[in-house]
Image (cartoon, rainbow, N blue to C red; front, side, top):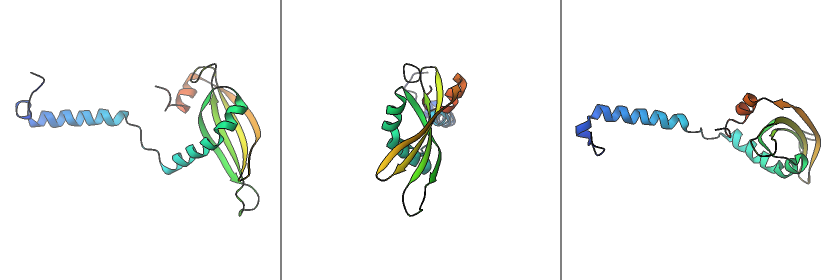
Length: 136
C-alpha cells in the first residue's frame, strides 16, 4: 500500500486503531508535569547549588530535600534543611556513586553549612532508581 493512503482506502477503523496505538506510545514516554511540591523543591535546591558545589568540589546531582524544619521563633524565617545529593566519579553520571547528606541553616541574612555526612555508596540500580529522570 502506498504511503499516501487516504482514510477511505485504509478504513476508518484502522486509522482510529493506529491513532490510539500512537497516542499510547507517545504517552508512555512523556514525563508527567511536575506538581507544586516538586517545583518548590527544585527552587529551594537551586538556592543551595553554589554552597553544595563549593563544599563537595566534585560532580553531583539528583538532589532531594530530605527534611526541613523551622528554627526558633515561628515569626522569624529561619530553617534547617537537610539535602541529599548523589556524587559521581570524575564526570557527571559516572561511577562511583555516593549518597551525601548536607545540613544547611537558612536565614534571610545567611545560608550556612552546619553538617555533611557521606551516607553510603550506591549500587548501579540504586543510582538508576534515584536518578531515573537523568538515566536513559
